[in-house]
Structure formats: structure tokens, C-alpha cells
Amino acid sequence: MQDSPNILEDSGKSSDRADRTTEFVGLWTETGRRIYSYILSLLPNVHDAEEVFSEVSKVLWEKFDEYRPGTNFRAWATRIAYFKILRYLDDRKRQPTPIDADFFKTINRIVNEQSAALEAQYRALADCVNHLKPRDRQLLASRYAEGATTQGVAQTLGRSVDAIYKSLARIRSILFDCITARLAEEER
Image (cartoon, rainbow, N blue to C red):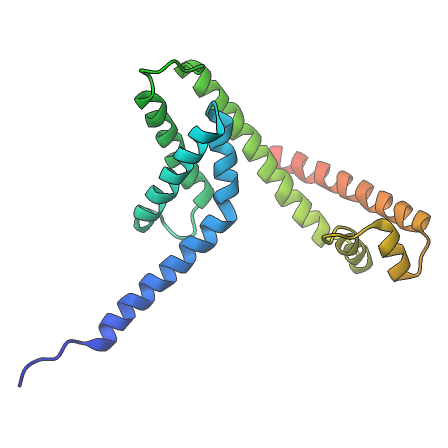
């Protein structure tokens, strides 16, 4: 009798691949806009940025098996984007370009520093929002929901517009102090 292929083993492999595909799509959806912004900050025009972004997207997918789950996907993707930008600029050297290598490296360093600072601020904001009183969190969520207005929130909550403005100012002050303290803690 002839051995039949192990269907369960094959379906396990396709299930693993589907899981990796889902993982990639989730990570890329979460990170893609930031990578595009990074590329756009380093290239002279939108057309060049879109071309490199497309190439980076393709390479990230092709090399996704090299990505270690649980590590910083954005940092990994940014590194690949950096080298793709360098290659793109090198390939275009024959054409006049307003960016020389030293200037490019300086801009890249500044963008990375600002990106890291912004990430720290986002983490601090999320942590501080989580420590707000539930009523304050709900007010923030209501006010910053898409299409919401202060007047609409006031009407929904049965409060005056002035009271909503004062509550939001108080919450913003609490968040500012909290974020400032968290960032100071991180620097130590």
C-alpha cells in the first residue's frame, strides 16, 4: 500500500503561514503610516517616497520570516527603509539631488530621535489616560470621538458647554502633569 501524504501536517504548515500573514498584516497596518512618514521626511519628493515605500513594503513581506516575533517591528522596518532609501539615493546619484550623504545621515538621526521621543510621549499618554477616573476617561472618549463637538457632548451629558470646557481643561492639565512626570522618570 502506498503512503499517503500527511494532510494534517500540510494543513498545520498552511495554518502557521496564515498566522504569520495575519501577524504581518496587523504589524504593517499599525506601522505603515509611520514608515511612510519616515521615508517622506528623508526623500525630496512624494513620488520618490511612494516608490521607496512600495519597495520597502515588498521587502518587509519577503523578509518577514527573518523578523523575530515580540521584537520592535517598527525599528526593524525603519532599518530596512533606511537602507532602501540609501540604495535609492545611490541609484539616483547620476541625477542631481539636493541631499548629500552627510545631510541625509543628520536628518535620519534627527527623525529617529524625534520618533523615539514621540513614542515615549504616546506611551506616557496612554498610561496617564488609563490612570484617570472612569468619568474623566469617558468624557475624553466622548469629546474626541470622530465628529464629536463640545456642544454635542454637553447636550448628551446634560451639562453646560462651559462646564465641559472646564472639565476638559482640568483633565488636560492632569494629563500634562502626568506625562511630564512619566517622561522625567524615563530619563533617569
